[in-house]
Image 1: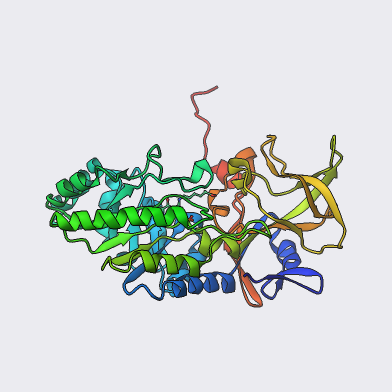
Image 2 (image 1 turned 90 degrees about the vertical axis):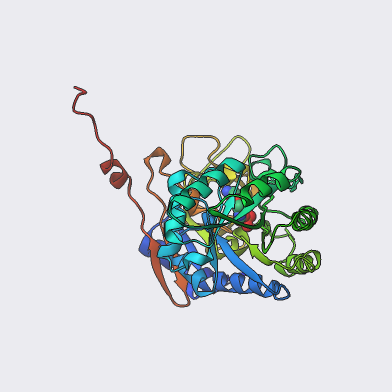
Length: 419
Ligand code: LLP
C-alpha cells in the first residue's frame, strides 16, 4: 500500500499532484511520500510484535537521504551502515550511536576507529583478520567493541545473482562450519565483546524458505557456541524481504515474515536485530520523468524519457522491472520500449512493454523507486545528479538538490603543466 494515487485523473503523491512538482522542481526527480514511509516502518515493527527483545536498523544504503532517515529515526529505527559516510549520515539524521550497526565486507581501519569513537552499538565482523584489527584498535583506545560474527549459511536465496549474499561462493561472512573456532579465537581477545552472530543472505527475497533454512542453521550454531561456554545475547537476522515491483507480484508480507521469525527463534533467548531496507523504502518513492520524444523503432516505438540509467540504475544492472505509468493517463495503451538519453543500449528501462500511451511532453513515473534508486545515481554522461523531494500531506520540500554538471566540473582541474 502506498500514497501515490490518481485524483481527478492526475497521479498525486499524498495531496500533491506530481505535475506540480515537475513544474516547480523539474524532471527527472525522485518523489517520496512521508506517510508511506511511516506506514511501512510501522507495519514492519508491528509484524515483529511477538519478538520480546528486538532492534530494527534500517539498511540506509537503500535510501540514505537525510530527510528520509529523520522520518525513520522518529519511528524509533536505528541504522545499518556500511561505510564511514553512512555512519555520519545516520548520526546527522538523529539516530543514536548505540542504535547503529556497522556491516560491510571491507571496513577500513579508519572506519573501525571512527565507529569506536562514535560509540556505535555493534560491529558486524566479516572475517577473523577484521575482528583482530578491531580488537587491536579498541584495546589501544582502552575500549571494548561490541561485536557479532557474520556467518555465511550457504543457502540459495533464490534472487538475482548480483544481490545474493549467502551462498558459500559469495564474499560475505565466514563459513558456518568454521564459525565456532573463529568465534572462540575472537572472543578471547581483549578489546572485543563477542556477543552473537549475524547473517544476511540476499535482497529482494520472494520466498521465506531460504531465510527459514538459514535461520535454523544459525539457531544450531548459537546452541553450539553456548555449549562451548560462550554467552550469546544477540543475533542479527539481516534484511532482504522483497517488495512487489509488478502489479501481480506477491512477495511474503512483513506479517508472514514476523510469524516465521517468531516461530523459528522462540527458544533462542537473544535480542534479535533486523536490517530491513527495501521493504521499508521501496514503495515510498517514484522517479518522476518527462517524455522527451517518441521515436519509431524497428518493431515498436521508443519512448525516450529524460531519466536515464544514471538516475535509476536497477534496470540496467539487474534487468529489474519498474512499473511505468503516466501522470495523466488517457486510458489508451501502446507497446513500446522505454529508454533514457544515455549513449548505451543498456540505458533501457523496459523492452516491448504495454504501457499507458504517452507522447512528447507527457509526465510519467517509474514506481517502487524509493530503495536503491537515488542512492545509486551517478553523473554519467555529465548529467546532473538527480534531486529528491519529500511530500508530507499538502506540502513538500526538496530534500536533495539537483547537483548540476557544472558543480561537478568545478571540482575538477586541468593541470597547468599540460600546455
Ligand atoms: N543488511 C545487509 C548486510 C545488506 O547487505 C543489505 C543489502 C541489507 C541489510 C538490506 O537488504 P534489503 O532489506 O534492502 O533487501 N542494489 C541492489 C540491492 C543490494 C542489496 C545490498 N545489501 C538492488 O537494487 O536490488
